[in-house]
Image (tube, rainbow, N blue to C red):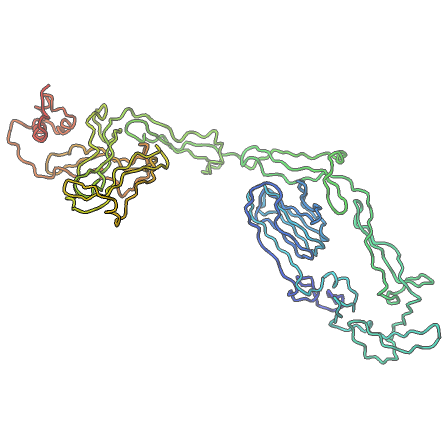
Length: 624
């Protein structure tokens, strides 16, 4: 039969997660959480406090990082990874329990560091993180006793029948050996003192007759037997300070012969106290850390590992001066490594055509990183310093230039009467036209046009003048304007006292301004000449999105983009009246566009086209 946690043969009791023999896991509570704070300073940062009496302690980094966990007692004694010295994974004593420090393999594992301990702790401990990179999260969990919970240590060390926290323990079964009746003889008078039932705490009396002693159980003569130290347990370590305990047996006081412990009073048995042993230090040894990751993902790289001289003392591994390990050959701290053969760059296509028909543009080609197996892989797999160019500039020669214009503004400058609408005009390279223009010339299109929203009624209102220039050339500034009260009449304004307009909301006389950047807008050239003079042709213009500094932009609203092509001259063709005035070439419209009709040859060869344009634009034809 098996022995339960209550030391009774045949008992099926086990210790629950709270450390209570036969408990139902309700006498304690689990404390857990995740430390996810963002840290900025390098060094030690406190994560969580482990209270006294904690059990089943688990502190685990949620993923691998370059940070380290550290443990320190409240008295300031470092237990693991203190004073900027990183300890090897292993078992470390602290706070009355043994902590297991784990650090998974740096190359093959993605798991983080962890501290594990069964407890219970006998003092408050602080857990720290040595912060070197962003915190991946630290999960912590431990169990603490609830209110009025019997300490597991008391349960483990109490004698059968001893009171627990001032109350009597009531075991589940009865042990008849503990229920015997004791008969004691008064040695002074030689008279029998009688027979008295002696009930141990927490035990029920046996139902045996009061004048009987259980068979096979000799009377206990406490004065003839006592406890004697016969030796000590084996030292827990062979060096570096271990511990051992004295061993006590029940012996005859006269013969010193060992007898069954039942002859001695168990309540008088000395409690073994821990004694230090083998205090001389253990030989120093080289503590070899794990290899770091290879410095290169392919090709020949380097990897490193930490080598420390260590000694065991008092069940702790201490870092000592390296001269203590001079009797041993020091392992290498660096080594070459190669995870795989490096990939190489391959040019997969020829150069594309230039991105512009004239001026300076760009052309591209496809460059890929290919592994030694022929697969396309990420560019980081190849040496970026040896990467061939996949983009370069190309010069297609000088471009012709034209005026580019925006659409007219939607609003008139005056709410009534005469006003103006505006647009932006800029001279730029024109990729549509192939005409040999040397520049935009002096014939700049107008930037304003008149508009009229109808006659003004004779009403009183605030009149705001134009804004002054912005107080700054760029960024935020202010600008002012005059605001007066007027009565509008047809073609006239009468200035009134501001009181007359007090019932109206007065426009602001000052506002903030921000000149640059103004954002992107659509610009376009003038329409080209219609491709046909009648029966429907088309004309084109170039449209560009330009930013405030007149460079190409992609920030314009596509829905507001002006048309780049539209039909024209949809009227029916009128037969030529003059049979001698005909176009001799099919492309006379190009002659008209190039303004070559001023020359006699072209005026004759393209008579009809030149005549039509002359009729529309008097003074177009001349003689040179």
